[in-house]
Amino acid sequence: MERGQFSSRAGFIMAAAGAAVGLGNVWGFPTQVASNGGGAFVLVYLLLAFCLAYPALMAELIVGRHARANAVIALPMLSDKPTLKLGGKVVGIAGLITVAVILSFYAIIAGWLFAFAIEPIVSFLGFTDAANWLTQFSLSRNIIFTLCFMILTILIIGAGVNQGIERWSKRMMPALVLILIALIGYMLTLPNAMVGLSHYLTPDFSQIFDGQLIISAMGQAFFSLSLGVGCMLIYGSYLSSNENIVKAGAWVTLLDVGLAFVAGLLIIPSMYIAAHFGVEIFDADGALLNSDTLIFTILPALFEQMGAAGPIVALAFFILMSLAALTSSISLLEVPVAYVVEAHKKPRALTSWIIGALVTALSLTIVFNFSWLFGLVITVTTKYSQPILGLFFCLYAGWVWHRNGALAEIKKGYQGAENGLFWKVWPWYVKFVCPLFIIVMFVHAL
Ligand code: PHE
Image: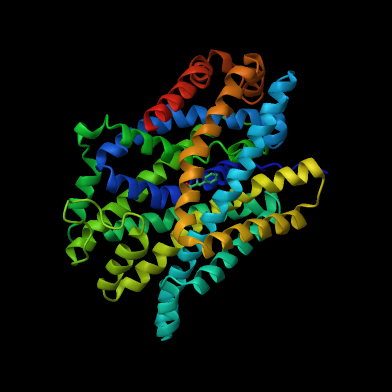
């Protein structure tokens, strides 16, 4: 069976940026900024994203393209020693499990976004009860919309690398950027927006060395760039050898970080606009209210106050969020599907449905045990699994794999790579800086 491959560099960049740009950018990042001292968090995040997450991203992309396989097969290929081979396999499998769990909670949140996107239309048509049902937390709504979202994800992944992932990422990503820019243009004309903007852009330098802030920023950077779970590795494996992988990876990082930053330009001012309209956003101590439900409570309350423009803005906003979620969820499902297709030679469409069904079962388990399970799976996967696995990916790329192997892979699409800045810096980064930093952060956190 022939392996899928992205048709062009642009196709790869759209797909990989689509994988990276998701709820982490449009929801996670602004929420974290709001609850971690505004501009200080932005500054630390930017630093960590470029100095720590980009090298780790490159490790996954290069290993993936070299192996032309999923992580479970790729990591063991980097060594001849049986124990290291076994270790690589274990890391790959741990990534598969993590990715399935991430998708299971991601689908629930994305389902809410779908429901909120449909609400303005249903409301406009006069179905008030249905509109209320869509925006209120209930078992029935959560089940139905999680299912809808998973089915869409399965359909795209079942269609393959070109006809599914690349085709849909190329459509959804530009749409997402356009909606985002249009929304910002409109929102910044509203009262109090500038107060929010200055809170977002003025760092409070006293907070920059706050350990908790740095840990949150690191977790956020790993989650946002989809690291540690073999997702970028598999996308790298679909990148043509003729492409300059260093440049392609830099584009993905720039787009991901850039879109998180731009999403902040929308969300943070929106909160202050909401405050102007009388929506409460801070508690008595000045901490952000409802930091987890910002998007589903504060912003809808704002849209309601906006008169005729409200439903249109709400519609555009939740379509934007749904698109971001979908381009990421397909990358999450691709990881286990690619593994089963490659390792067990199964047909892609059928595999997508079977694995999709398993993940959906996991989602529904969370839906039924929401109060204690939802927060728990998010914390375990994003705060612990992802950085720990990311650490192992760096160790495999930096210590287990021979330096020349990595260089040869980079040189395929980038002649003279050995003289470039990237090659002078990156090997040291994956070998020492990234692992050390991740370990120090963990020790500090515990
Ligand atoms: N990066 C995605 C986001 O920001 C989430 C994600 C994590 C996707 C891990 C794939 C793998 O929403």
